[in-house]
Structure formats: C-alpha cells, structure tokens
Length: 65
Image (cartoon, helix red, strand yellow):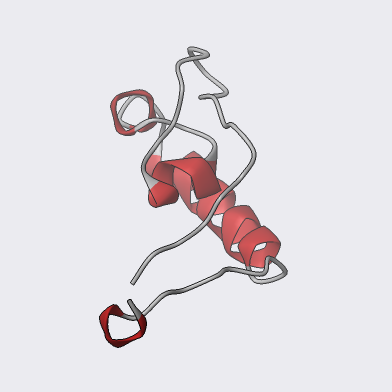
C-alpha cells in the first residue's frame, strides 16, 4: 500500500522536514511532540484527524504492480 503526498511538510516547532505520515498529519516531528503536554497533543490530533478526513489519498496494492 502506497500513500501519495505531494506537498512538502515541515515541523511547526523546529522547521525540520516531516516524512512520517503521522507526523505530517500532526505537523510535528516525533521528537518535538514529546515536548508538548498530552492535552495539547490531543487537540492537535483531533484537528489533524478532521483535516486528513478531507484528503484524497492514492493507494496502490501489491497485486496491481
């Protein structure tokens, strides 16, 4: 399964590039996310879930290759 994401994403805390889909959805790298309070992460996760629910993702099955 492949997820296609065309726009570059950077961490909102440190500005480093984000490659992990979960980090891209949150807008935070895993290292920077550990510096936030759990309540703040929950708010960001809810916002990311709402935003990514509206995205169109392209998947390629291994059978199709």
